[in-house]
Amino acid sequence: MQRSISVALALVAVGVAFAALGQNANVPPGASSGVPVTQVASPPPSCQDEQGLTYLCGLVVPEDILSVGSTGLLLASGHRAPGHLYLIDPKARTQTELIHGAAFTQQQDARVFPDCPGPLNLQAFDVHGLSMAETSPKRFSIYSTSHGEREAIEIYDLDLRGTAPALTWKGCVLLQQDSYFNSVARLADGGFVTTRMRDANYKRVQGSPVGITGRLFEWHPGGRLLPLAGTEMSLPNGIDVSKDERYVFVAAMGTHEIVRFDRRATPMGKSAVSLPISPDNVHWAADGKLLTAGPNYVAPAVCSGAGCASGWSVLEVDPRTLAFSRLGGADQTAAMQGVSSAMRVGDDIWVSSNDDRVARFSLKRR
Image (cartoon, rainbow, N blue to C red; front, side, top):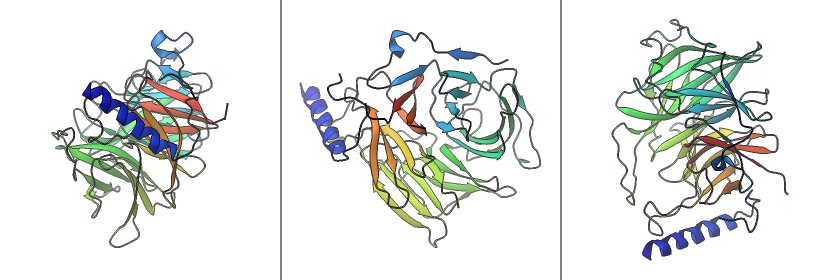
């Protein structure tokens, strides 16, 4: 009985928080709470559309998701060993696996990545946070955090100029091996900033304050991986940088915040906004806003335990004011939970997860 009361109170708290946002959630009022290509034509019952969501299933933990330039395609990570990269065609609702097939090669650029110990062990790594830049028409440089045999930023080249996509591993930058890094943001000179989320053996105690667990690190070609002073945070997760690279935006999952750092200020300037979700990844949308996604946050004092679920939401954040609004989401009965990232394609929002699927919902009012 006590758990039932706690769940009810939690869902009321979440509803109050999001009612204040006044945005059009995609859940309608009254709704109940050589490379193989996979076509999703007749989805199994567990992959049926619901709550305004259209699913694309059969992926291995597609934790992060990005738009691939102006191609209209999406790139999703595969956050379990053996790691995956998925190229998704939103219109056709198809997915192409880029790593475990004939179109994948490993060619280390020893000049740029001289300290990388060698090619990927394809059975002992994963693909976690993603960052990407278009280096020439239809060619993309992809950076990814990776765990397994080594804790590293792995770098790839994606070539979409031919009849089939071709992915080439180019090298790596080793990170602290006793740590767990979460996300990465590529810089214009080929360097990056990344979130050291926590120690590798960190265990979170449910219901207890998280405290400071990690910070940001920065690397540039020819240099060393260095910590950024003043960036200590509670479970720093997603990260992205402004176009001029002045501002760094980080999802601090432990404090339910988006934190903005000003890299031109000495000491580095810091602003933050509290969110009604536990934000996971954060990425730019084409309209200049930031998108973040995560489970709806419910304070432990209100709700605790495995039976307390609250659904999830996608938020849009103004990078100048840090004001936010809710674009959509789903309640705790939806088949997809554990959401982790969001990306906009036209009037659609695509959401990735720590599950076996990604989801799409429309921003058009029905």
